[in-house]
Image (cartoon, rainbow, N blue to C red; front, side, top):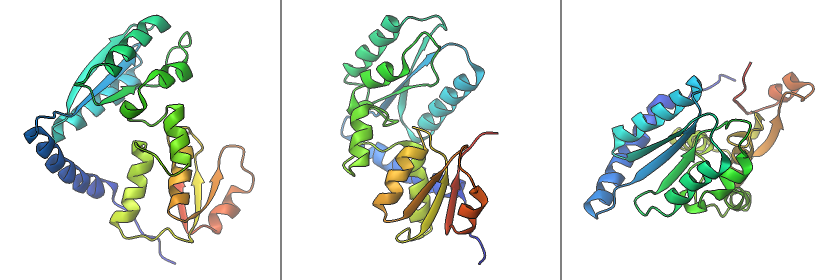
Length: 211
């Protein structure tokens, strides 16, 4: 069987055009979509991720607000920023760049974000709703992967999908989205034995792992 290559850039560009139209409609109704990002510390990789998110928003007409804290910031300082953003009616989405410095509690930080502004869908409420198929917001990367299947008219129903990732941000939510599309999902990771055998029997392989 010949494999099918999926062009993610092509799908991304198509989605951006749809979003541009939707955003223009919102603006005509007096609503300017706004994403607020929170970056703690000066990690170059994290700073690049945040910059790319701001650039992507700018290209499709989404306003952004950038909040930065030093690497030695306290939990109280971070909580105050999140509380202010939760209460800011002009902010529609909040993204805290992870990982955080060791002195900060990631779970407590994410849990503090208002679920309706939690664009990464990492708050306990949104994680639970996603597992029940009742989610208000779906995490971006897993949603993007599902959107690519829709775009190329790949029917997931009954397909054996091997997913090599179990992260909170990608693997776990993607597992639930695949199940909701009636796929049979096997999650593999660094401790999985006989990975090659699982892949041999897969109709679809999704991987997102480091070195």
